[in-house]
Image (tube, rainbow, N blue to C red; front, side, top):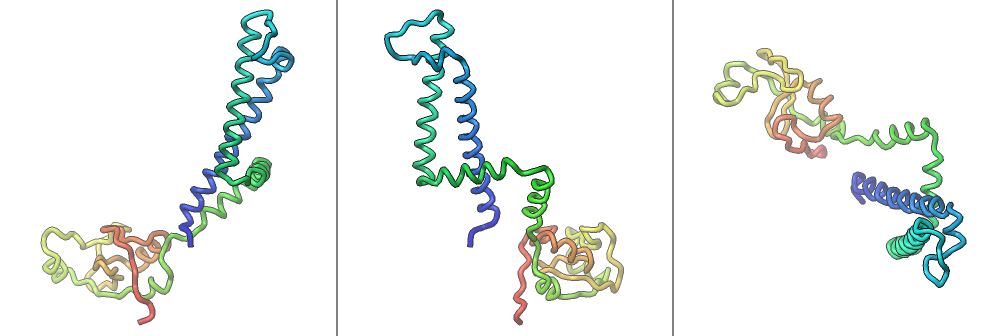
Length: 195
């Protein structure tokens, strides 16, 4: 199973490549809008009225060659799937603002938090002000919840993560719905819920 972030990154790269190729197609059509370019190829025995017409013809020829190289490279990279990319790009290009917003909302709703079974398996501990400080030592300032910044009260029930950091139950459950790591040490929260 592929990582969703990697999958999204690959899709965005394919879209960017398709838009780049579409942009070059449109650029070529725009550069061919001069009458001198369509009537006179840059190579050959024909003479040009002025340097500007000759420069335009050379540029148009160079643009055509570059486009041919890009198309060949695209065909080689996609294995001939260019039509699929063009169809997808055309469909995505025609999306309305509302459709784009809905798509963004749908893509952004993937949960990055821990499972509710893991949250319910977190052990509860009682906070005792004096023994806690003595056990942690002077360098540990775990007398408050780092999420809400409220001090723990003596006898208060707290949830303890596997890394032994403690938090208010409501605070850590809201945090773990969005994140898999401890807010202090960033260790991933994992519990065997089958025990």
